[in-house]
Image (cartoon, rainbow, N blue to C red; front, side, top):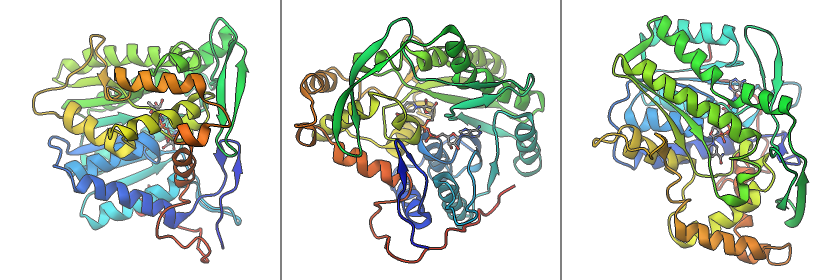
Length: 396
Ligand code: NAD
């Protein structure tokens, strides 16, 4: 079939297998061109098919030569529908890892469930023995609790007060004002149940109890803080509450793993175009301005550049892992530089529909959004007949 993008708001319901494979290959090539990362033998990446999780898996495998298990929630092509982008990304990753002689396996299903945890534990036991790195990179709108069966839904809302600010429709470049009513107490606690630290803790407990964590294992989960303009919908909003919970979990996991020489971290990453961030009001406009400023200063990074720097200069840095005074790894350091934020905030105050194309990098935002789904990748013939059915090697 001829596969074209079909968008609904910030979602694209189709994905292109060859375009996704090209994006994965580009990330692999980037990592292979850098200095190797030392210290990872067997990595488990939970939320491994797109965004920061995929990039973490690529750095582990192609930067450190590690065997990897990727856990993710994606679906194959069926009944004339394409598979999801994460499915095609993972098929390409698995093939490349296999070609490179690395052990690599995929588990597709709900990471929040006991069933998928048990399946992953069995796989580690039989294929890898133990894991020494666990990356937790799940971004999900909902979670069914494995013990109570209750389903929680996360919301992206401010807390306490109604919030109004600029936002962009990145499809047509219209800058408008968005107003979001504050979350209720119940919405706050549901968001914490989905995006907080409970599931990360459950994974580490399960791995540790089963004796499948290497003594000096490292685990990391991802966070965002960002500037003032996004605080009401991020840091001080419902998602921020969930991230505070994640940070608390990180600290207690660090104590828990510390007994055997292990370490747990929360890394604060840069704002980037991913399926998860496209869903947050205000953030796409901020990212468009940020890209413009960071590119001008020659310090722009995508997921793979961020994750390579996280692994090589923080998590596995020969001089040890540096954190801020709260114990967080800051790989958002370039984004948060004073000169960067000053310029972004000047642009923020004047940005409008009329000057958007000129003062922001909305064109890259849009292109990267489509690239998440395998579109607008160089060297791909989008008019060619393409088979949407792609199988994932080593799918368990
Ligand atoms: P993403 O949407 O690209 O990736 C999410 C991953 O989670 C996918 O692999 C998906 O398959 C998986 N997933 C979702 N639900 C699942 C489930 N029930 N079971 C198993 N896997 C499931 O998101 P992302 O932007 O890479 O976000 C990853 C982490 O990074 C999140 O914690 C996010 O808050 C954080 N982060 C993102 C940004 C950003 O700007 N994108 C910045 C800083 C931190």
